[in-house]
Amino acid sequence: MTQANEQFYCGLPLAESEVRFRRGFVIGADRFLTPTYTISPFSSQHMCDETPTCSASGGVREWFEQRFPGRQAVPTTSGRAAIRLALLHLGVGQADVVTILTTTGNHYISGCVTSEIEKLCKWSRELSPASRVILVNHEFGHPYEAIERLRSHGLPIIEDCAHAFACELLPRLPAGGAGDYAVFSFPKFFPVQCGGMLVLPQRAHVGDVGEPPALIDHVASVVSGHLSHIADWVESRKRNAAVLAQLLAPLDCTQLLPINAGTVPGAFLFRLPPDVDSEALKTHFQGNGVEASVFYGQHAFFVPVHQYLREVDLRYFVALLEDFLATRSKAAAHESGGGVCSSSQSRPGAVGGATIQGKQDRGTQ
Image (cartoon, rainbow, N blue to C red; front, side):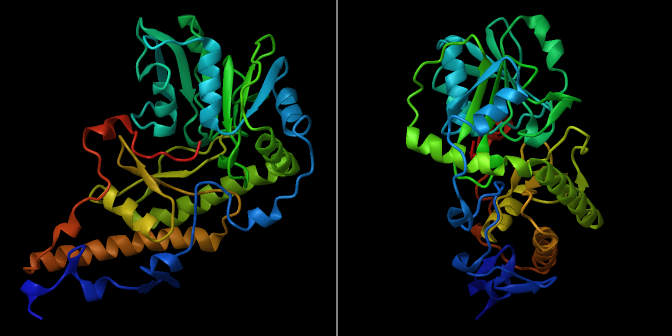
């Protein structure tokens, strides 16, 4: 076969882009034979392990109401449903604006959040006279620590704690305790497929939220059975973040945000070397079974960090990055030698102008 007729992938002849073995890991296997790593700690094994231990009327709801004295906790099927319920309770209309503020001030925000807001009103990333509600997002378990300063605007504050279940803003002030409402998403922290919680003022009247009772009871039972593990899981996540930071350093990747006392990472965010195609890297990770993505607005990336990951799992993530860097290096050398790259070299998944809003990744909420 002549070079003109060869098929290319990432600038390499197809024969060179097949299954590889790096650092003790198989990379590039058939899609049905890849491992599965998600941001959530849930995996298929938990479908058998889920043993209800408490009723929905106790357990997790009581835990929330003890953690947030003077508040009531309303279970929902998801974090998205909790956001919608909070906005409905606030009575927002189509002309109103929800202003979203985040820990980093970066433009990235999950489409799970914005799409839910868009069902009822508008959203923006800056405070304006049209702002009716402030939604503070504790990004990936890194707390937004300036909530009290927002009080001067006289607007209700919703804390998005989807990735901040066990985080603290200050000693004895948990994430969710500084605003008027707090939204939680159980799959981000617990090995469960759905579920969330809305924490709101005790005096607020919610009524029937229309959530399916059997599903709510099931999720509450499973989560309640894991509440005693929270402290251990917090330490596991912090330990995994420290291991990843150490393993990635030789590849010129640095941790994006520090792990402070109140931080409980929901994912591990790190800066990429300047010449790395982040969209192609996202495709590479996802094609090898890892739920990972670009932290849009900064040249950064994120991977799972949850409590069930072992060091060998973290090393697999690093091996994928090493493989990507090595493959691209060979591709560049091949192209400089006259190779031809087909359209598969294009950037699948890139979203032109929408990248600024960071709406392309719709993770579980």
